[in-house]
Image (cartoon, rainbow, N blue to C red; front, side, top):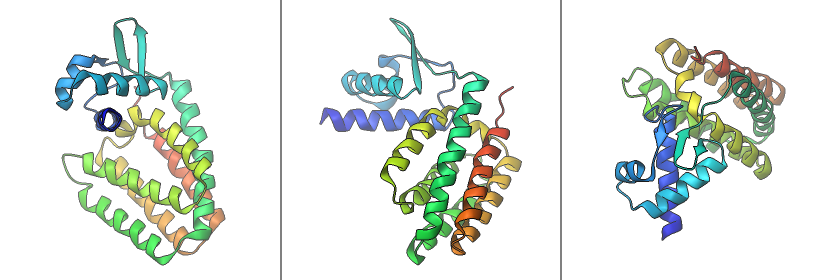
Length: 209
């Protein structure tokens, strides 16, 4: 039971970071997070330990934990690695996409277009993650998927900032549109190029200053 609660605590904390509720540099305490999640401190303590392990949180002293702040060089490296890994996944997926997978991807794409103008972008962020995960799953490479997941977690802190305004979201949607077309055509080379550009574009859209 404790394991399932700690997993729930970890996922909810990741969502808070993704949605910008918890921002880079914010202090994290077991007590405050437990109250926010309406949980006891034991599963929250384990969730914090795991999030430190994957690099989303950072322990800077015995009693102080913060949402990790990354250097610009680290962020650039993370997105560069993501571009390579997700480009590979897109190429593999393009060869394997079946009609049912394409319908799922198109549905997510249309849902993102529908919620793009909302004041609350949490739905868009969730759909965006689902969109990418469909591609990773269709690629049928568990090791590659695990590597992508690990790198994506590190970039959670910045993802909401790369989609912080309407113009950036529309650009991302246009890039998704082109990816869907490449997958429909089963064009692995084009899918790889478009995905790499999409991830690199995400870095360029970051509001780091």
